Length: 121
Image 1: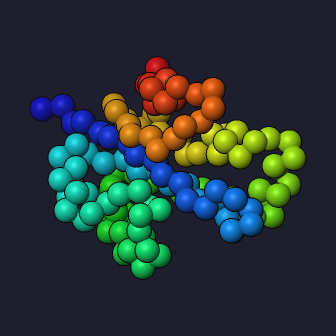
Image 2 (image 1 turned 60 degrees about the horizontal axis):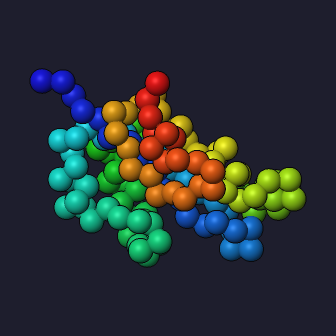
C-alpha cells in the first residue's frame, strides 16, 4: 500500500507589537491523523502556552518531518515598511510542497489560492 503523507501549517503572533511571528509546518503519515485528533491538535490560537508546549513535544516525536520559522519583532519592524504582513508570512512559511500529497493551510493570503500553494508540481 502506498504511503499517504499530509502536511499542515500554522502560525501564531502576527504583529511586531506582540512579539515574534512563529510558523510551523509538519508532515505526518495519513495513518497518524487519528493520533493528532486524540492529542487534541488544533489551531494554536485556541491553545494555552502550556498546551502548545506539550503538543509541540508530542508532535515532534511522531511526525515524518517538521520545520519552524521564527521572525523576531525587530525583523518584522524592518520588513513591514516594504512588505505587508501577509507577504512576509507567505515568503517565510516553511514550504511543504515537496513533502506531501495533501495539506491543510490555515491561511488567507491575499492573492494566493491555498490549493495552488499546496499543489505538488
